[in-house]
Amino acid sequence: MRCSKRKCNNPAIIYQNYSGLHFCEAHFVEDVERKAKKEMRKQLMVERGDKIAVALSGGKDSAALLYMLKRIFHNRNDLEFFAIAVDEGIKGFRAITLRNAEKVAEELNVAFFLFSFEHEFGFTLDEIVAKGFEQAPCTFCGVLRRKILDIKAKELGATKVAIGHNLDDEVQTILINYIRGDVERLGRLRGRREEFVPRIKPLRGVPEEEVALYALVAGIPVNNVYCPYASLSFRFTVKKMLNEFERRHPGTRYSLMRGYEKLSEFLPTQGGRKLLRCEICGEVSASGMCKACEIIGRMK
Image (cartoon, rainbow, N blue to C red; front, side):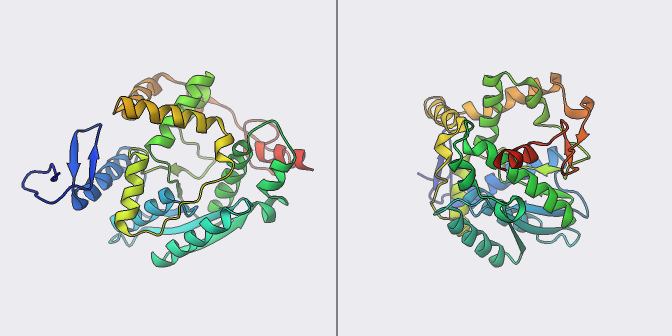
């Protein structure tokens, strides 16, 4: 098939079921970056003088995000980008992705900072899992990763933290909270709090498969290893369900996103919620003890 763009006769490399369009390599890259730019403008994600920490795991999403930010803002001397990676301590998995993350940062001439659960908290995710807690490993991992990212981003002077969440990630999160009836958390998905380094997600409007193809086209080093604990999470179940909906009904992900954005105008935000200080670490928390310190206490 040929590219659907007018006056373009180049062979297509992708067919978008949800749009009915075929794109050649050049127009595909243009389409992905257009979606990211639109999201960044709409949410005022990148502002003059920003120093942006990119959460770089070494996977396709975060690697593609760092590459894209450097490409789009290559002529902006007022902006600075650096990478933060977190070693959770997952044997046979994280060492591979961290090598890839460091390689990507080096190729893009970006400063690379690595922190670990073991150094910061005194234990690894594998050791948490060995305790046999009822919650899925991803629950602990997410809390502790966020803790490290926020603290280290502040220490390194970041004004924003860029996360490589794509459309699939965002819609999965929305649907998880719908299913759980967690209206408060749904409202917090769009809010920003001054107490935390703001998080930005330029890829939130780009489907996962398109992020992967973008990384491939750009020649970004990507490996195909997967976290051994991912399949144990509720998110994994929701992901499979959404993939099946999207396969049968193309455009489902975008419909869910649009529906949420309309609904979110009526949801409570974090603005009226009083935050406290964790009595142990002193960081901002919803209660007297933050979730990270709670996990550390359970491990002890």
